[in-house]
Length: 65
Length: 303
Image: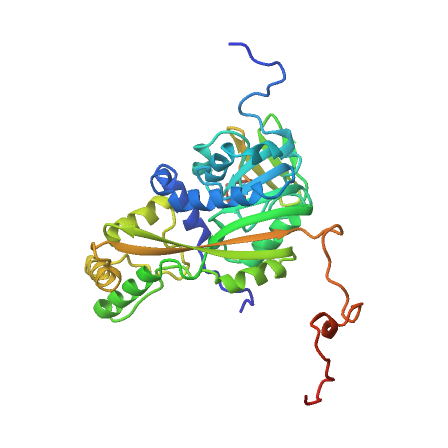
């Protein structure tokens, strides 16, 4: 099978979605940790996981920092 | 004592119900399919493009499917499916985000369109959720959301209460309170939406038996998550009596059990200077009496 070179991997988050996501607790900005697949809210001290390309923006699922 | 309003719904339990329903929702999705088709029809009448849209409470993707067969899809850039239940989202492809309708994770003024088919009636603070939606919309961004209205499941509510009173000597809250259509438009206004509209679609579904209705509610993940719900499950005797009363009072000629669902569809726009604005009081240039071709009397004067 041939794929278009520009096609992102299946489990990556669409950058247009990433751009508008904020922390649901503080409404502050998030840092994208590509390696850990986490979205980090420094203010809330929470790291939201990204599972199979789906950001899980639920505080109960986040890792406490 | 805290002054916070009491929580109606147990959101964690609601999430667990949705997670559990992820596999079965397709078997009982007729209401959401209907609400989604209606939302898409409304979008067809609005000649705009929406670069970034969010479906709040996407469940098994009824809105995406309704859009797929509509010309509106071409006017939507990215459609993000959001749901409280990660298990529900796992059944979908495409851009998704797990999000709580009570704590939205979207930046202010970032979205062009928010749609929602039958999810927001489970929020503890519907005005608050609507405010958050409005804040996440760009100026002149559009919200169309369907929720269940006050007449929903009136038959079941009556039969269950009656049966519990008869058998247990008292009744606990088993069915959610829903918003009335009259409240709905004012809710939109309170949440800061411009040009708010709400309308009502009453759907009667005829079930072969009341138990089939309960089956459907479970499959949809729509069963009771009231925080103050009666903790003990409904006894077999109460359930049997509920079915009896239901059919006695509401059963049709063929012995089927009609169930009412009220779908309230809310439409509102994030305010923008380009929208029609009301004039300031006293700024009229024409007298109402002239327009009505009548004679004006001063207040207090008797004709």
